[in-house]
Length: 318
Ligand SMILES: Nc1ncnc2c1ncn2[C@@H]1O[C@H](COP(=O)(O)OP(=O)(O)OP(=O)(O)O)[C@@H](O)[C@H]1O
Ligand SMILES: [Mg+2]
Image (tube, rainbow, N blue to C red; front, top):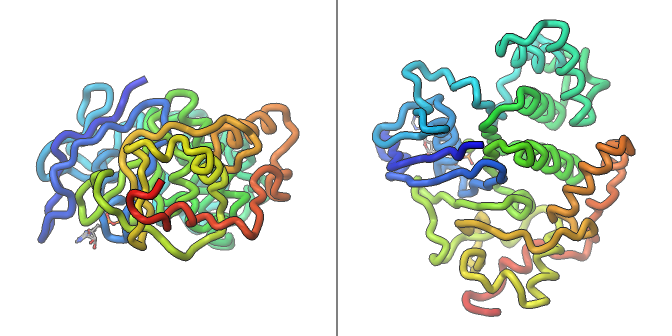
């Protein structure tokens, strides 16, 4: 297991898009990368995965540079792209299978593994449909199946849940957790507080700079009704939110804290908790299965929960 490191990474076009970033994305952990639109998340992932050459500094994995001189990522790297990157006239299965064939997997085996990957995301029945006939959320899950099927050491997912309902978001988070559990570096660019909440680590960008966790950050006042119940419960118990590295203060905008986060609970009844995701995986492993998730199961969230309540606390309040 190796970490992915960014050392002094700068990216300049007509202006500086990333300012001398030093970051480590740890193997075996899910890291959220948040920040307002245009703050540099996609640019950072592109450099981290070897698609773009940094103007200064470098990204390395297992001690070797990510940039190989061509813009082709190393084979250990897999992307789930923000714009999906699917071939519209190919079927869902073919779109997934090509990623495996490109890694020299035998075509029959690639097709079989592609079908299994689609099943992980509850779209096995769409395997033969052309991608251009699919909805945005279905396309997003095809892109996830393609990104996750190859067993990459570094998985870079750019807003992978932006088109998904709550149940499918939980499913995707569980699958990303499975990738981290086998030792992959998993980085997830997101605007979604519930996705941040499900990750182990969190770095926030603003105008190409890392937001220091001691500075006020912008947080949303309106949005989806995804529950942060476990956080709220922990706050009520006066526990981990008092820690400086997860302190959250109010100013309106995207959620942002930087640094390592400790999961508050492994209680599977807590939506968004590791325990909750674990129970998804256990359900899958037990074959109990996946359709339950569309029915809600442990991802159900009461309507009267206010997911942003904790972000509205005035600075310095307990
Ligand atoms: N090829 C390019 N030429 C010029 N500017 C670019 C280019 N690519 C990105 N930018 C600019 O770089 C900044 C960062 O873009 P980036 O796509 O990394 O943001 P982001 O945080 O991923 O945003 P979003 O949340 O909307 O996806 C933006 O201001 C964008 O306009
Ligand atoms: Mg982006």
